[in-house]
Image 1 (cartoon, helix red, strand yellow):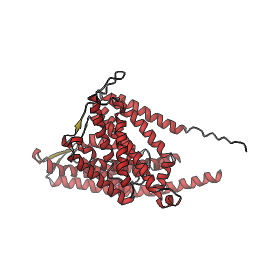
Image 2 (cartoon, helix red, strand yellow):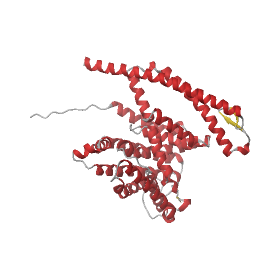
Image 3 (cartoon, rainbow, N blue to C red):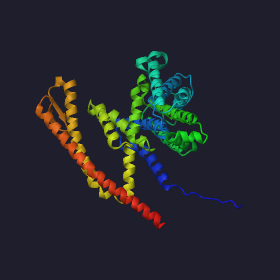
Image 4 (cartoon, rainbow, N blue to C red):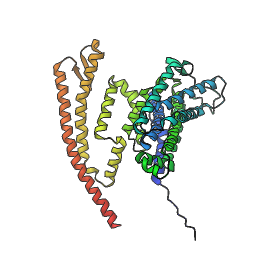
Length: 430
């Protein structure tokens, strides 16, 4: 029988996307040149690796973990201790390889703790991860010899011999190290999704009984995925240790694990690029939004509630749905609805935001007077007129938003019907 050779053409679109991703990583500090921007870009790279590693569990494996910060945090601790050993001459490895130390540490702890954790799935798995997270956080306050107590463990990343003038003293050098790790780790995690293990992990998420029926051990699949996620989480932790040069107990706390869960969901756990969007939003919220208002956590909770109600697939799902509509040339039919939704949502949020700022002012800044500045408008936190006006704006915006949303849903349904008819027409023509 003659051999048959099939040549699969290059996926040009994929090459373009990865090239653009590399170009963005290279050019970002050249566009955003301030020290704050460079620091935020470095944090975004770390967050991208951490959120994507978490999505191996949540999005690809259906494992809701409340303790992913355990592996990023322990990776950070091991990396900072290794950095201090390099500074003291006890360990002879380049500083650029210290994130690998964090990755190996994260993988080691995932091997140790994941064997117990992954024996269950669903809600029991989530509760076990929460218990493990609380246990590790309690240990971080008890064993100060390793964890450094409340002060944490600090280090100096300018250690060892300079390599071609690279000392990792300037922040820009640290950024490009993080960018290199980000690109490689994102590529490796994407490659994992295309492997047979990644595919069977999706099957374990969707129908574990069927996977058991065809002969696979679902616990073993979850365990291996857990170890891989722990490795990449540890790399993110090691990069964080180099970036900040200090590691405290906060890195293994419940707040950090909750942030990974929240922003991975907001970005879109069902799409590979969703956690990347979520990681960028996480850094913007933690660095910029927290400086603008003391109520930033409340705003974040409201955004999460809004997304759960109206876009449970996250930002990535909204992008993909509209790309499908644009592909069939139907986006022009609903752009006015999008404009209406944006304007009415802005009015609603402006009224709600003004009320939130007045409440926080009364609770935290009452000694500074009764006047609150919000979006260029002066409000009196103790005046009924201000409260009535804000309530009226919020309720008006809410009502108009709901009317616009219902009209949008009708138009969206018509467009989806037209798209389905077009798809069937093309199939019939072929």
